Length: 49
Length: 572
Image (cartoon, rainbow over all chains, first blue to last red):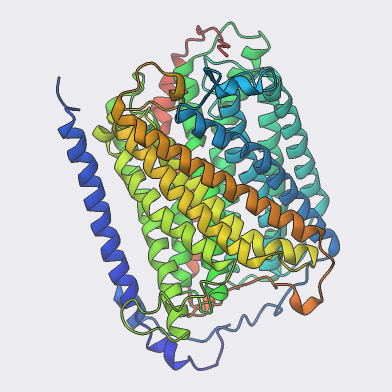
């Protein structure tokens, strides 16, 4: 069922490097914001008895 | 991740087995339009109460009295307003928009009319009767139980009946989709299900499985209890039933937006879908993982053993995986579009995206807000942090980034092409519509940041903080911030509604000026997607088995130890 047309050149050469960078930034944001919340909770004495 | 792009054979797509397009009939357009009309009407009423809550937070008083006093006897209390806001915006606006949108995605995707359109009409009528039945007690202050309707808060029986009708009506519409799909499959045994129909069908199946929770809760507990047929209910069991549905409800809101992000947005942005396989795999993962994780909403419930909470916590992190896949695939599709439009460098494709497109921009902004909604969700799903933020304003801050951002802002972007398409009009004031999307975005950034921060400072949720005597000084700037954000959101909501209303009232436009239904092609021919990503039986089996495995034992324990002893309370 696949088309017999040849792929476009730009499709073949497409490597989503910008997306990979965006995902890296996303992961850094997750760690930073999660860590911030965790440390803020600790600083407020959330774990104190 | 780059391996995905470099090793996959790339073939230009021509959906060979499908007609190039499908023209919706007048009747089909009217049916979809009616569902959107009910959705927008619900949003227009539900949104009235958002700024009221936000302004109340700021401590605004009239003659020394809480601002809700202004609206008495029409509005009895903060909690009646909060119930109207939650039910109309989170349940009705979303559900009616989704069923209307799915009528389009299933028929257009499969390139055929509904097999039994009267069945879908029946579903819509049942939903509407349910909405009206539930609305009456809410408006009469007989159902001020918020949209979670936790017992022992007790509502009028009509509220519960109305909710059942809304859910059952949506099921009936789902059956109409399944029959249509079944007949399409018989005619096209070897063709991959077109993606927009595929995602819509999975969403409907997920919804039908997960809503069994509130169906059982209402039919076996809340409804007989409200009719005095039961002496009391078991609030612990009912919370478990509710959250069986409650978390997948979030995905019922989100997945229709994903259908648009995967199957429409790439085309609108001038590109193609990066990976058909990844898109399909994500939808299957949502079917499998959306339901068996509801105990993460019950970390503070004493009746659920820690081991089950831990298992559900792990599965909660697992469901982040298809969301991350979605983020990657959608952003890669946008990157492709941006590069097609001349974007260079690592991030130079971003400014090349069609930011002036009134449908594209809201959906991209919705995705940006959802980044923070996702991070907040991952954060508050961690057991120890959840114990601290659980009943604080962090939680509504979080879900305004999901249902009121990823979902609602996407739906707004969809409506900006869909309503003109259905009504044969051009959109009124497209520049204003573009501004509306940015206003919503800015309002939500201010509002949700305020709510999250207040939660970290310990401010409780579901509380009229404007009249609370215990508000410390360090909450006050954040309460004001929340009020400002909420007011901006109100402006954004009513701009959206005004634009749609004026659009519908305009004269018909020439056919060439009316937007077409956007359907994105995939870089890779969908026929090259592995067949196991287009087969229902294994995924459905895994989904049901996993639910039985991680819900079954504890649910069985709770049911066999049920104590229907709690009387009902009506406090406001």
